[in-house]
Amino acid sequence: MLTATVSSNGQVTLPTEILIALGLKPGDRIVFIKMENGNYAVVPRTHSVKKLNGMLRRPAQKPVSLEEMDQAIAQGAAGNDRS
Image 1 (tube, rainbow, N blue to C red):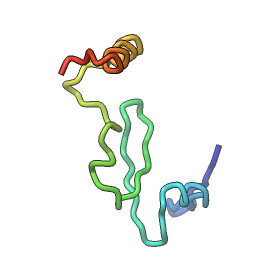
Image 2: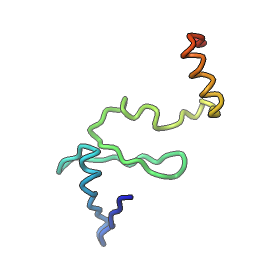
Image 3: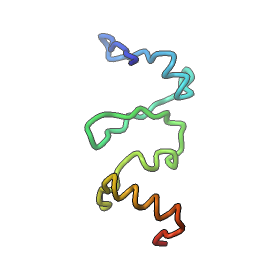
Image 4: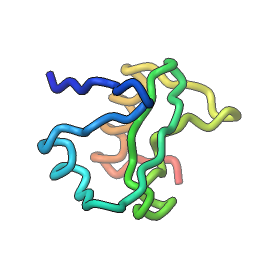
């Protein structure tokens, strides 16, 4: 687990491993996205919106169970998809 400390003026120095994983360089901007579970995702602002696809739940889309996912995968693999 990686940690960082917030300074008295609210600044955080990201661990080198995080900087490398996100491809961040000095001067790059990051975005904090609040997830449905209350946690936040940190995303480089340089990424396109398309790369965020799938991170957030669509409010109109009902959640599916693991069993439903497994069934959809099996149907797709067998060529029995509904499309």
